[in-house]
Image: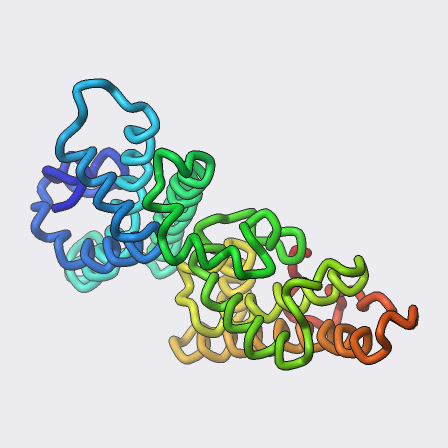
Length: 296
């Protein structure tokens, strides 16, 4: 199995019994592998795999660090699905857990995945010479055509904990919103920064609509911590049923989408008035009328 020779390699990063055979992790490992490859590119994945399989004679601390990050991310991603697959076995034994205990255990893995993937991506972004294959990947190069070029830019308009992992996952959503929402309303990417108030409204609209689409389309582990917390709090407040999660996510989508459209009204007014000076700043995002409060 890529990056793991035996169960002890996994146990460096996750809590799993030593009696578990590594072959038992093969099924949940495959989607984890594909998810990581989609983020960093297959060529970069193979670069790190080759370094793990055949370490060079001269130590390479940067590649060693990258391999450590990808191992930790893969192990935790794998364990999320493995833990779910073992639910039936736990329920039939004395190892049965309450749902809140299962949620807590899974959330630890989720947080670890985000931490390790953020570390890996930041390492590669800071050394695109060593990680040239990453800099040449479609996912990385596509950012040059976007309004938000990196997680730090995005975080200024909607709090995502400056997560490079989420930013890369949401790149296609940003592109989609730019084409289907902004450009159809007359926004030109090249001139967004022509005026501070206009730039603010455009980027707020973009950030909120990307988050709206993410809240609807992404699975729970793929959402930023602030959004996961909102969803968890709301689900705990209700008598939880699987159908409730869909309803709650749809409610969150609608609130985020509505806020994005409020900013789009400001954008459209600015375009129509052609810098007439009549532009007014958007209203405060958090109010007592909203079920969810957001980091801005």
